[in-house]
Image (cartoon, rainbow, N blue to C red):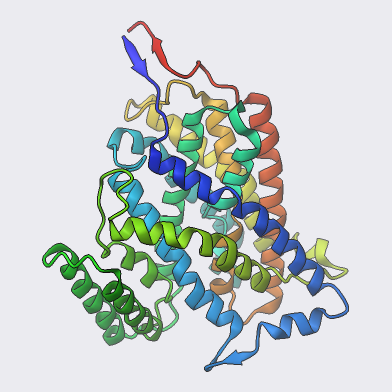
Length: 397
């Protein structure tokens, strides 16, 4: 029979084009932050981010407020993928869903096995997520040397990874819970959702104003305020028509891509990657927490992704795209080990107030992400050739 290979949709291509440059800028900002932190003005650089404005430090404003906008964009992208993107077709979505499950479970189990019962156990969520921007940066460098289906697969499972990380943040990194504030936040969300579904209010203004109120209530509830950004995305009117520029969700997503990629994430990197490289930094990477993070990202990701996908395909639940083989899947898992943004974000929550453990965790994340990116690039450069040429392929059944 004739099988048409999976090709990216227009929405995927726009997403890929808008994200691919931010990884390079994140690397530059990380290097600047590391150099500034370990320069003669390092103490002043770090104290700058601790300056208080409106009752919160600049770092707090960045991690709670600016990153809520980043999470809003993640929510909008996830909504698009579910309704009109690569996850809208259930059969296409199954393989990256299993990849994400394996890619989250294996790193978490590795970290837990090394840190169970210790204060470092709180870092179990650190090696779970994948940094989409960095992964796309590697894919851009590989260009046409890898199949289009692999790009779709990596982005799809990275988006699901982020959803898993967001769920972990909401479930496990909540210090004190105020039920009334949380109920208020969801009441606002239900009002916004009703405005969309029942009254078809298409103006963005009431959703953004309601979102700001929801952020405040979520902040006061004890649940991390960035979660408000994700759930707000699913209250904003969305059109499943590809390239529908009249959709409020579509317009907001397009508007947010550049500010998030070129302002918010670089500022986050500048404020959160100030790792002090002391004389004993090598020794700190040998702590069980750091080993759990590094092993989880570098080993756990590719093993979890490959093994769970293999079981899913072997059992007949789903199948590999025609131009992919298991070397491609393993390479995708290696790139999944680029944790960076979400891993650093979870580190700040897991070890709040513990500067030493936070610093060593961030060092482990940087080393693991750099290693995963380099190995993933070299692996796919060597083994990333498409299994079959793009187009229609006749196979015998």
